[in-house]
Amino acid sequence: MHDVAIIGAGPVGVVAANLCGQYGLSAIAFDREPDVYDLPRAAGMYDDVQRILANAGLLGAVLPGTQEHVGAEFLDPDGNRLIGIEFPGLKTSNGFPPLLSIAQPEIEKGLRSCLDRYESVELCVSHDVREIEQHEDRVELTVHDLARGKSRGVSARWLIGADGASSSVRKSCRISWDSLGYDREWLVIDVEREPSVELPPFAQQICDPARPVTLVPMPGRLYRWEFQLGAGETREEMEDSNRVWELLAPWMSSEQGRILRAVVYRFHSTIAATFRRGRVFLAGDAAHQTPPFMGQGLCTGVRDAENLIWKLAAVKRGNGSDLLLDTYTQERHPMAVAMVQHSTNTGRLIDAYADMTVTGKPPPPDLIEYGYGGSKQLPTLTTGLLADGESEWIGQLMPQCRVRNGTTSGPFDDVVGPHWAVVAKEDPRSILSEDESRGWKDLGATFIVLDDPNAEGLFADGDVALVRPDRVIFSLGPNTAIPGLLAQ
Image (cartoon, rainbow, N blue to C red; front, top):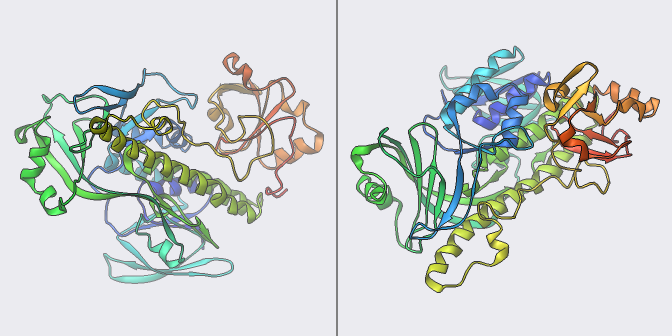
């Protein structure tokens, strides 16, 4: 019996499979298709997701399919900036560039190549999972090999549904799929341009009342446009090649590029009512669907995978109770809702700025906060496996500061590895009680000393930071007790 079965081997499913290998879980992943989908879809990768991939040993394999974003802006119909942000080429507190643009097929190929490192992880393409049956101690699957025309049974301790917005896993569990109130049709056009064609280096939202337009620079010679459909416009007329080139005419001609995709999509904001049903978990688009205006769809799914896998590993090792797995929905559901709402409000701001050019009435200030460079920050964790405390750092990611473990010194992630960390400005074992030190050691925690003058203000002398394997700060202050959900 496998520890984890994964249905859907897109980027979220394959990241989950790689994390299973890293944490010592056996896993088998199934996908209906024989290979990765060969057209670009997701377009962005934020710094915290780069950090997740780096910690899993995956970032190097995907970097060839990326390039750094230089900035993003909202423009009026005449090309004047309304609001925007520029990335100065520096790294964030996570230790990585703020945002990379990505070519998803190359990303997926890189992620899949890393599975070869793990004998305990298997990828089965051209396999369709046709039946799912939960039992008290396992999940039973009936899987059909599409290439050979044969079916077999597979059992696993847990099942992850990473099979997209139309998830058969979600439907089999009868988990409701709830709208958060944004539904618009947009024509998405991906073009491979000639090298001589110069296009805006910034991601742009052109807030034109005649037709809002999105421009997205992508790696290499790829470039994306998104055109909002107007009243009465149909999918058939908008996907027509002549119509597509008519829309692209302000930027390039048909002789200057090759259309890879021109498809009308309905941008949704939806969320599953729960991300867990017994031994079955949802991740990625199976759990939430996000409008693309913030480039957060793939990123939110990767965050799901990281949050879940270390908890599954803790339960399997006997270092966590089954209740620990309930914190997956407790933590990821509100975070996903907040991210969907953030992206939805960004889309609403596009419409509001477009209306402004007609009515002269600016968008409300609380909506402008969601624009690029606006004051509204992306959500941080506030529920689930967190200690009570007043520190604003609880629920945030531990900065990628320099730390020390004995004679080993380096960036936090490199020194700690995929473990809990007990951090202080001096050896934390001199602050903890003997029982606490022994308990954290038994849980595999790394004891480290802050060794970075730039991070001295993070906490005071005598305070201890307890940092989860996913780098979320569980507690910061005098509380050094082991969380009750972690078995000892």
